Image: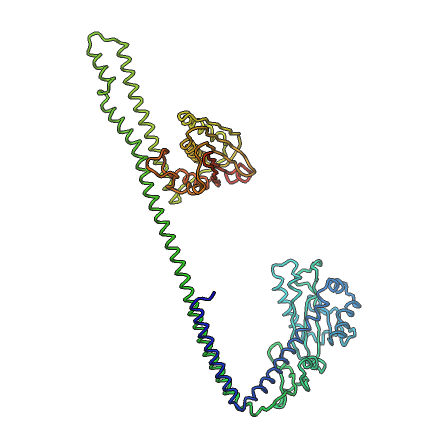
Length: 576
């Protein structure tokens, strides 16, 4: 549907065309001498027809040749030097059906193998009479053929359309000479580029040719003349390869009211040309302005949509950063509180109940060794429990910091892996043993089905990925089980981590891999985490030439699949 600018431009352009047309019509009506226009048009038309028909007659000669030269039989019989066949198809037949006066077959060096003059077989030496004139055309054809054959083993299709044709002036005759290659039409006959045979056709410039050119447009008295046409005749030149005029095709033109037309023609041409150019410039300007306005309008709409989208993305990023800071502050505050609390207890160990009871016992005169030992053990147990909680909190802090560092490396493109050929069972068994403690603490069942097979992976980073996936599975599963299963396809090793947790909504399945994103963003959420684990895990998998996929059903559970390259001969080379 056109825009308002297009409608306006079309209306203005239509009005201008109407005004110009009306003015031109008025000039024609008042121009008493306008009849000259018809005479000139007739003459120009005759010249165009004559030039076109002359060009078509010249161009027809190679087409006539190709009817017999683009043929497997031609290649085979010329190679066999079958003179009878060559005369029936490339010599006398060309004379009888197409009016070719001379026909020659040449080898790739330009030597004549067959000659036919006026439909009769001649000795190949007859070509020597024409050789000096035709050899330049042969060289031009071979140059064209070489370019067409460049880079091709069997360029028969490209060479089937190649030809060189030009009018030439012999010592005793002006003729049209055409040179074409003799080429296989099926491509089944292999011809090395540069070894093709050539066919030369010569048609004299004579009365029958002039009649063929003039008959379609009924040109009166048409003939070829050596001299240029006089004022009473019309004519078109026949030019040689260098642009020299070899002959003229002349005829008697129709010239109704020529003198009257000559007086008004300059004025009409000037007015028409000036008005047409002026109108064309105006219309082009209007259309260009209209297109520019429309393009700017469309670009403005696109820019507005892009700005809105960028704004939404920026707001989402800001919200994610705020949520991330809230999450990180919560995650860091909890272990720090534990560490500081137990550090203060350690600082004031003497104020703990077991220490006070031990002090009272030691002040007694009669010291009960068993009682002392029991209080010392209780005091040491309290200290050990505090140290264990400090250690676990410190490890948690280290895990959080490592996640932040990995994410920072990922964002700057400095996250690296070092793949090697390893056994998936040796990679996963230590992780299963480590995570079994967490499943036992939550009362979950842990199943593992890990056959031994080789894969290409960074052992440390792969364990980091599996720890993250299993940690999430345990974190979000309150009852049931967590399982790890390994399957093998043709090119990949697939590690499935399955849980019976609450599952993930469909619209969250891709977003869970975004940095800082979590399905539950409240600061009071039951499951801890920074929201960076899955983002870092997927990037590590990508760096290992692998992938992480997820499927989930709410209320049933989730399956995260880590796919890594299987050991192959190619992977052995790359690892080496």
